Image 1 (cartoon, rainbow, N blue to C red):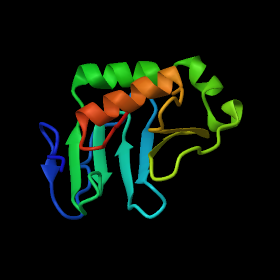
Image 2 (cartoon, rainbow, N blue to C red; image 1 turned 90 degrees about the vertical axis):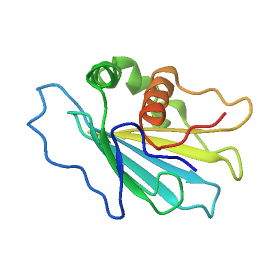
Image 3 (cartoon, helix red, strand yellow; image 1 turned 45 degrees about the vertical axis):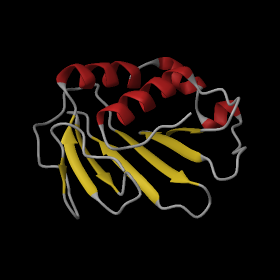
Length: 146
């Protein structure tokens, strides 16, 4: 099982505390994960200021909140601003789920970018989205495999 990331709190029904207004040009991102067809849906919401809230991240019913470090917020915002993300969307890649019982991770980046990947042998992950997924899963209780 995953423990809350450093600086995070684990509590039932946890929600992020308020923060200041985000700087102009910053974006929020959501990560939705599901293990197999019958696994629980896990969600991670990251605000532009780096505050995050995770519902059932480890599939154990525990909700967590926390905040990314300033350098992580800066890296995340740089990646979210990368114009290459538009070429990595499910629509642009004509993405279709390929594996059964794999961990499926979907990044939702407003206003309308959806990028999905699965932990399947041989699956090519979109490079910028993969770096975003890696940052989010290393800094929060969210999960990455493969």
